[in-house]
Amino acid sequence: MSKISAAITAVGGYVPDYVLTNKMLEDMVDTNDEWITTRTGIKERRILKEDGKGTSFLAIQAAQNLIQKSGVDPKDIELVIVATATPDMKAASTSAYTATQIGAVNAFSFDLEAACSSFLYGMSVAARYIESGKYKKVLLIGADKNSSMINYKDRATCIIFGDGGGAVLFEPNQEGLGLQDEFLRSDGAGREFLQATYGGSSYPSTPEAIKENKHQVFQDGKTVFKNAVFNMADVAVKILDRNKLTIKDISWLVAHQANKRIIDATANRIKLEEEKVMMNIEKYGNTTSATLPLLLNDYESKLKKGDNLIFAAFGGGFTWGSIYLKWAYNS
Ligand code: UT7
Image (cartoon, rainbow, N blue to C red; front, side, top):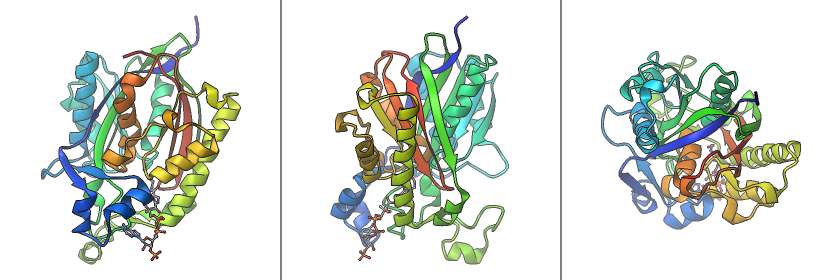
Protein backbone atom coordinates (compact mmCIF):
# COMPACT_ATOMS: atom_id res chain seq x y z
CA MET A 1 0.00 0.00 0.00
CA SER A 2 1.37 3.47 -0.84
CA LYS A 3 2.21 5.92 1.93
CA ILE A 4 -0.60 8.06 3.39
CA SER A 5 -0.05 11.81 3.09
CA ALA A 6 -2.27 14.58 4.47
CA ALA A 7 -4.00 16.61 1.75
CA ILE A 8 -6.14 19.71 1.96
CA THR A 9 -9.43 18.76 0.28
CA ALA A 10 -11.64 21.78 1.06
CA VAL A 11 -11.33 25.39 2.24
CA GLY A 12 -13.63 28.07 3.64
CA GLY A 13 -13.34 31.61 4.95
CA TYR A 14 -15.15 34.42 6.69
CA VAL A 15 -14.51 38.08 7.48
CA PRO A 16 -16.94 40.38 9.36
CA ASP A 17 -18.89 43.00 7.37
CA TYR A 18 -17.58 46.06 9.24
CA VAL A 19 -14.73 47.72 7.28
CA LEU A 20 -12.17 49.88 9.10
CA THR A 21 -10.38 51.92 6.43
CA ASN A 22 -7.10 53.84 6.60
CA LYS A 23 -9.12 57.04 6.26
CA MET A 24 -11.15 56.12 9.38
CA LEU A 25 -7.91 55.46 11.29
CA GLU A 26 -6.76 58.99 10.39
CA ASP A 27 -9.51 60.24 12.73
CA MET A 28 -8.44 57.90 15.53
CA VAL A 29 -4.61 58.20 15.64
CA ASP A 30 -1.85 60.37 14.16
CA THR A 31 -1.45 58.50 10.86
CA ASN A 32 -2.39 58.76 7.22
CA ASP A 33 -3.46 56.53 4.35
CA GLU A 34 -0.23 57.15 2.42
CA TRP A 35 2.01 56.08 5.34
CA ILE A 36 -0.01 52.93 6.08
CA THR A 37 -0.20 51.93 2.42
CA THR A 38 3.48 52.39 1.66
CA ARG A 39 4.81 50.97 4.97
CA THR A 40 2.43 47.97 5.23
CA GLY A 41 0.38 47.49 2.03
CA ILE A 42 -2.85 47.59 4.07
CA LYS A 43 -5.84 49.65 2.87
CA GLU A 44 -8.57 48.28 5.15
CA ARG A 45 -9.33 45.59 7.72
CA ARG A 46 -12.49 43.88 9.00
CA ILE A 47 -13.68 44.21 12.60
CA LEU A 48 -16.17 42.03 14.50
CA LYS A 49 -18.24 44.64 16.29
CA GLU A 50 -21.13 42.75 17.92
CA ASP A 51 -20.97 42.41 21.70
CA GLY A 52 -20.59 38.88 23.01
CA LYS A 53 -19.23 37.48 19.74
CA GLY A 54 -15.69 36.18 20.02
CA THR A 55 -13.22 34.19 17.95
CA SER A 56 -15.55 31.16 17.90
CA PHE A 57 -18.04 33.21 15.87
CA LEU A 58 -15.38 33.74 13.17
CA ALA A 59 -14.31 30.08 13.36
CA ILE A 60 -17.89 28.81 13.09
CA GLN A 61 -18.65 31.02 10.06
CA ALA A 62 -15.44 29.90 8.29
CA ALA A 63 -16.15 26.22 9.02
CA GLN A 64 -19.77 26.52 7.89
CA ASN A 65 -18.58 28.11 4.66
CA LEU A 66 -16.28 25.10 4.10
CA ILE A 67 -19.07 22.63 4.94
CA GLN A 68 -21.50 24.35 2.59
CA LYS A 69 -18.96 24.51 -0.28
CA SER A 70 -17.62 20.97 0.07
CA GLY A 71 -20.73 19.10 1.18
CA VAL A 72 -18.78 17.32 3.94
CA ASP A 73 -21.05 15.93 6.67
CA PRO A 74 -19.94 17.53 9.97
CA LYS A 75 -20.80 14.26 11.74
CA ASP A 76 -17.92 12.62 9.82
CA ILE A 77 -15.34 15.10 11.15
CA GLU A 78 -13.19 13.39 13.79
CA LEU A 79 -11.02 16.24 15.05
CA VAL A 80 -11.47 20.03 15.12
CA ILE A 81 -8.40 22.16 15.83
CA VAL A 82 -8.90 25.89 16.36
CA ALA A 83 -5.61 27.72 15.86
CA THR A 84 -5.93 31.08 17.62
CA ALA A 85 -4.13 33.67 19.71
CA THR A 86 -7.43 35.13 20.94
CA PRO A 87 -9.53 32.33 22.46
CA ASP A 88 -13.10 33.23 23.47
CA MET A 89 -12.44 32.75 27.18
CA LYS A 90 -9.95 31.38 29.64
CA ALA A 91 -10.44 27.80 30.83
CA ALA A 92 -13.24 26.97 28.33
CA SER A 93 -11.96 25.58 25.01
CA THR A 94 -12.94 27.66 21.97
CA SER A 95 -12.66 24.58 19.76
CA ALA A 96 -15.15 22.52 21.80
CA TYR A 97 -17.78 25.24 21.43
CA THR A 98 -16.96 25.65 17.72
CA ALA A 99 -17.16 21.90 17.02
CA THR A 100 -20.54 21.59 18.72
CA GLN A 101 -21.97 24.64 16.96
CA ILE A 102 -21.01 23.33 13.50
CA GLY A 103 -22.51 19.91 14.23
CA ALA A 104 -19.19 18.04 14.51
CA VAL A 105 -20.75 16.03 17.31
CA ASN A 106 -18.49 12.99 16.88
CA ALA A 107 -15.25 14.97 17.00
CA PHE A 108 -12.78 15.73 19.76
CA SER A 109 -11.23 19.17 19.65
CA PHE A 110 -8.51 21.41 21.02
CA ASP A 111 -7.10 24.92 20.66
CA LEU A 112 -3.57 25.53 19.41
CA GLU A 113 -1.72 28.77 20.17
CA ALA A 114 1.50 29.91 18.53
CA ALA A 115 0.70 33.57 17.78
CA CYS A 116 0.87 34.32 14.04
CA SER A 117 2.32 30.84 13.37
CA SER A 118 -0.68 29.07 14.96
CA PHE A 119 -2.19 27.94 11.67
CA LEU A 120 1.16 26.84 10.22
CA TYR A 121 1.90 24.71 13.29
CA GLY A 122 -1.71 23.48 13.13
CA MET A 123 -1.06 22.17 9.61
CA SER A 124 1.81 20.13 10.99
CA VAL A 125 -0.32 18.71 13.82
CA ALA A 126 -3.33 17.96 11.59
CA ALA A 127 -1.07 16.19 9.10
CA ARG A 128 0.40 13.87 11.74
CA TYR A 129 -3.09 12.68 12.79
CA ILE A 130 -3.92 11.87 9.15
CA GLU A 131 -0.53 10.32 8.26
CA SER A 132 -0.77 7.99 11.25
CA GLY A 133 -3.86 6.43 9.67
CA LYS A 134 -5.85 7.01 12.86
CA TYR A 135 -8.18 9.76 11.53
CA LYS A 136 -9.62 10.51 8.09
CA LYS A 137 -11.20 13.95 8.50
CA VAL A 138 -9.43 16.68 10.46
CA LEU A 139 -10.81 20.22 10.35
CA LEU A 140 -8.20 22.92 10.99
CA ILE A 141 -9.56 26.42 11.58
CA GLY A 142 -7.46 29.58 11.99
CA ALA A 143 -9.41 32.45 13.55
CA ASP A 144 -8.63 35.58 15.51
CA LYS A 145 -10.61 38.49 16.87
CA ASN A 146 -7.55 40.72 17.12
CA SER A 147 -9.69 43.80 17.77
CA SER A 148 -10.32 42.34 21.25
CA MET A 149 -6.71 43.03 22.26
CA ILE A 150 -5.82 46.11 20.21
CA ASN A 151 -5.46 49.60 21.64
CA TYR A 152 -7.08 51.89 19.07
CA LYS A 153 -5.02 54.78 20.36
CA ASP A 154 -1.70 53.03 19.54
CA ARG A 155 -0.74 53.72 15.93
CA ALA A 156 2.04 51.13 16.04
CA THR A 157 -0.50 48.28 16.27
CA CYS A 158 -4.02 49.43 15.41
CA ILE A 159 -3.21 50.02 11.76
CA ILE A 160 -2.03 46.45 11.24
CA PHE A 161 -4.51 44.03 12.76
CA GLY A 162 -7.95 42.83 11.66
CA ASP A 163 -10.42 40.04 12.45
CA GLY A 164 -11.18 36.94 10.38
CA GLY A 165 -11.33 33.18 10.11
CA GLY A 166 -10.39 30.47 7.63
CA ALA A 167 -10.75 26.70 7.59
CA VAL A 168 -9.26 23.71 5.76
CA LEU A 169 -10.15 20.03 5.78
CA PHE A 170 -7.30 17.50 5.85
CA GLU A 171 -7.92 14.00 4.46
CA PRO A 172 -5.66 11.05 3.57
CA ASN A 173 -4.13 10.95 0.09
CA GLN A 174 -2.31 8.08 -1.58
CA GLU A 175 -1.27 9.88 -4.78
CA GLY A 176 1.66 11.64 -3.13
CA LEU A 177 -0.25 14.94 -2.76
CA GLY A 178 -0.61 17.03 0.42
CA LEU A 179 1.97 17.98 3.02
CA GLN A 180 5.50 17.08 1.88
CA ASP A 181 7.91 18.73 4.33
CA GLU A 182 8.12 21.28 7.12
CA PHE A 183 10.70 23.32 8.97
CA LEU A 184 9.27 24.85 12.17
CA ARG A 185 11.17 26.94 14.71
CA SER A 186 10.69 29.06 17.85
CA ASP A 187 12.82 31.34 20.04
CA GLY A 188 11.51 32.58 23.38
CA ALA A 189 14.00 35.45 23.41
CA GLY A 190 11.50 37.20 21.13
CA ARG A 191 8.64 37.43 23.58
CA GLU A 192 9.59 40.84 24.94
CA PHE A 193 9.12 42.42 21.50
CA LEU A 194 5.49 41.41 20.92
CA GLN A 195 3.09 40.67 23.74
CA ALA A 196 -0.01 41.62 25.72
CA THR A 197 1.64 41.63 29.14
CA TYR A 198 -1.35 41.66 31.48
CA GLY A 199 -4.33 39.32 31.51
CA GLY A 200 -2.42 36.04 31.43
CA SER A 201 -1.15 33.88 34.30
CA SER A 202 2.11 35.82 34.86
CA TYR A 203 0.37 39.12 35.35
CA PRO A 204 -3.40 38.81 35.86
CA SER A 205 -5.23 41.99 34.90
CA THR A 206 -5.50 44.75 37.47
CA PRO A 207 -7.50 48.00 37.23
CA GLU A 208 -4.16 49.90 37.02
CA ALA A 209 -2.88 47.70 34.18
CA ILE A 210 -6.13 48.14 32.26
CA LYS A 211 -5.99 51.90 32.77
CA GLU A 212 -2.51 51.90 31.20
CA ASN A 213 -3.63 49.55 28.36
CA LYS A 214 -1.14 46.90 29.44
CA HIS A 215 -3.68 44.14 28.72
CA GLN A 216 -3.51 45.13 25.06
CA VAL A 217 -0.88 44.29 22.46
CA PHE A 218 2.47 46.04 22.53
CA GLN A 219 4.97 45.57 19.72
CA ASP A 220 8.47 46.79 18.96
CA GLY A 221 7.64 46.86 15.25
CA LYS A 222 11.15 47.41 13.96
CA THR A 223 12.64 44.41 15.82
CA VAL A 224 9.72 42.15 14.88
CA PHE A 225 10.01 43.32 11.28
CA LYS A 226 13.76 42.56 11.07
CA ASN A 227 13.34 39.11 12.59
CA ALA A 228 10.36 38.32 10.38
CA VAL A 229 12.21 39.29 7.20
CA PHE A 230 15.29 37.27 8.07
CA ASN A 231 13.60 34.16 9.46
CA MET A 232 10.72 33.75 7.01
CA ALA A 233 13.11 33.97 4.07
CA ASP A 234 15.60 31.67 5.80
CA VAL A 235 13.13 28.82 6.38
CA ALA A 236 11.65 29.17 2.89
CA VAL A 237 15.16 28.79 1.40
CA LYS A 238 15.81 25.75 3.63
CA ILE A 239 12.57 24.04 2.51
CA LEU A 240 13.39 24.67 -1.15
CA ASP A 241 16.97 23.41 -0.83
CA ARG A 242 16.03 20.34 1.18
CA ASN A 243 13.43 19.33 -1.41
CA LYS A 244 15.64 20.26 -4.37
CA LEU A 245 13.01 22.72 -5.61
CA THR A 246 13.87 25.60 -7.91
CA ILE A 247 11.59 28.61 -8.31
CA LYS A 248 10.32 27.05 -11.56
CA ASP A 249 8.83 24.23 -9.46
CA ILE A 250 6.93 26.61 -7.15
CA SER A 251 3.37 27.52 -8.07
CA TRP A 252 2.58 29.78 -5.10
CA LEU A 253 4.10 31.42 -2.03
CA VAL A 254 1.48 31.44 0.75
CA ALA A 255 3.02 33.82 3.28
CA HIS A 256 1.62 35.20 6.53
CA GLN A 257 0.11 38.63 5.85
CA ALA A 258 1.70 40.92 8.46
CA ASN A 259 3.32 43.51 6.23
CA LYS A 260 3.61 43.56 2.42
CA ARG A 261 7.28 44.51 2.73
CA ILE A 262 7.98 41.30 4.73
CA ILE A 263 6.21 39.19 2.09
CA ASP A 264 8.03 40.95 -0.77
CA ALA A 265 11.38 40.45 1.00
CA THR A 266 10.69 36.70 1.37
CA ALA A 267 9.70 36.43 -2.30
CA ASN A 268 12.77 38.42 -3.38
CA ARG A 269 15.10 36.24 -1.33
CA ILE A 270 13.91 33.13 -3.21
CA LYS A 271 13.69 35.20 -6.44
CA LEU A 272 10.00 34.37 -6.94
CA GLU A 273 7.93 36.39 -9.43
CA GLU A 274 5.19 38.64 -8.02
CA GLU A 275 2.46 36.71 -9.89
CA LYS A 276 3.19 33.64 -7.76
CA VAL A 277 2.83 35.45 -4.44
CA MET A 278 -0.63 35.22 -2.83
CA MET A 279 -1.60 38.57 -1.37
CA ASN A 280 -4.76 39.87 0.31
CA ILE A 281 -3.25 42.03 3.06
CA GLU A 282 -4.71 45.16 1.43
CA LYS A 283 -8.26 43.94 2.28
CA TYR A 284 -7.86 42.31 5.68
CA GLY A 285 -4.60 43.46 7.34
CA ASN A 286 -2.98 40.96 9.69
CA THR A 287 -5.62 38.47 10.87
CA THR A 288 -3.00 36.40 12.80
CA SER A 289 -4.11 32.72 12.58
CA ALA A 290 -6.50 33.40 9.71
CA THR A 291 -4.10 34.83 7.11
CA LEU A 292 -3.01 31.53 5.52
CA PRO A 293 -6.45 29.87 5.20
CA LEU A 294 -8.00 33.17 4.01
CA LEU A 295 -5.37 33.27 1.25
CA LEU A 296 -6.26 29.70 0.22
CA ASN A 297 -9.94 30.61 0.25
CA ASP A 298 -9.41 33.73 -1.89
CA TYR A 299 -7.11 31.94 -4.39
CA GLU A 300 -8.92 28.56 -4.42
CA SER A 301 -10.24 28.95 -7.98
CA LYS A 302 -6.69 29.52 -9.29
CA LEU A 303 -5.18 26.46 -7.61
CA LYS A 304 -4.62 23.26 -9.60
CA LYS A 305 -4.08 19.68 -8.55
CA GLY A 306 -0.34 19.08 -8.22
CA ASP A 307 0.59 22.76 -7.64
CA ASN A 308 3.54 23.19 -5.28
CA LEU A 309 2.75 25.63 -2.46
CA ILE A 310 5.35 27.06 -0.08
CA PHE A 311 3.84 28.33 3.17
CA ALA A 312 5.78 30.67 5.48
CA ALA A 313 4.84 32.45 8.69
CA PHE A 314 6.42 34.44 11.52
CA GLY A 315 4.88 35.61 14.78
CA GLY A 316 5.07 36.44 18.45
CA GLY A 317 7.10 34.26 20.75
CA PHE A 318 8.98 34.25 18.37
CA THR A 319 7.51 31.41 16.33
CA TRP A 320 8.06 30.77 12.63
CA GLY A 321 8.42 28.18 9.92
CA SER A 322 7.77 26.99 6.41
CA ILE A 323 5.74 24.11 4.93
CA TYR A 324 5.85 22.55 1.47
CA LEU A 325 2.49 21.19 0.30
CA LYS A 326 1.22 19.77 -3.00
CA TRP A 327 -2.31 20.96 -3.78
CA ALA A 328 -4.76 18.06 -4.14
CA TYR A 329 -7.74 19.23 -6.20
CA ASN A 330 -9.11 21.42 -8.97
CA SER A 331 -12.09 23.50 -7.89
O1 UT7 B 1 2.43 39.09 12.53
C1 UT7 B 1 3.70 39.12 13.09
C2 UT7 B 1 3.88 40.27 13.94
N1 UT7 B 1 3.92 41.58 13.37
C3 UT7 B 1 4.70 41.97 12.34
O2 UT7 B 1 5.31 41.21 11.64
C4 UT7 B 1 4.83 43.44 12.15
C5 UT7 B 1 6.26 43.83 11.95
N2 UT7 B 1 6.51 45.26 11.92
C6 UT7 B 1 6.01 46.10 10.99
O3 UT7 B 1 5.25 45.70 10.13
C7 UT7 B 1 6.51 47.52 10.98
O4 UT7 B 1 7.58 47.64 11.87
C8 UT7 B 1 5.43 48.57 11.33
C9 UT7 B 1 4.40 48.65 10.22
C10 UT7 B 1 4.75 48.23 12.65
C11 UT7 B 1 6.07 49.94 11.45
O5 UT7 B 1 6.77 50.26 10.26
P1 UT7 B 1 8.29 50.75 10.30
O6 UT7 B 1 8.66 51.02 8.92
O7 UT7 B 1 9.08 49.71 11.05
O8 UT7 B 1 8.15 52.08 11.09
P2 UT7 B 1 8.95 52.57 12.38
O9 UT7 B 1 8.34 51.97 13.59
O10 UT7 B 1 10.42 52.40 12.15
O11 UT7 B 1 8.64 54.10 12.34
C12 UT7 B 1 9.10 54.94 11.28
C13 UT7 B 1 8.50 56.32 11.48
C14 UT7 B 1 8.65 56.83 12.92
O12 UT7 B 1 8.80 58.23 12.87
P3 UT7 B 1 10.24 58.90 13.03
O13 UT7 B 1 10.76 58.43 14.36
O14 UT7 B 1 11.05 58.39 11.88
O15 UT7 B 1 9.93 60.36 12.97
C15 UT7 B 1 7.34 56.49 13.56
O16 UT7 B 1 7.03 57.31 14.65
O17 UT7 B 1 7.09 56.26 11.23
C16 UT7 B 1 6.39 56.71 12.42
N3 UT7 B 1 5.18 55.91 12.52
C17 UT7 B 1 4.03 56.24 11.93
N4 UT7 B 1 3.67 57.29 11.18
C18 UT7 B 1 2.40 57.32 10.72
C19 UT7 B 1 5.02 54.73 13.18
N5 UT7 B 1 3.77 54.29 13.02
C20 UT7 B 1 3.13 55.21 12.26
C21 UT7 B 1 1.82 55.31 11.76
N6 UT7 B 1 1.51 56.37 10.98
N7 UT7 B 1 0.87 54.37 12.00
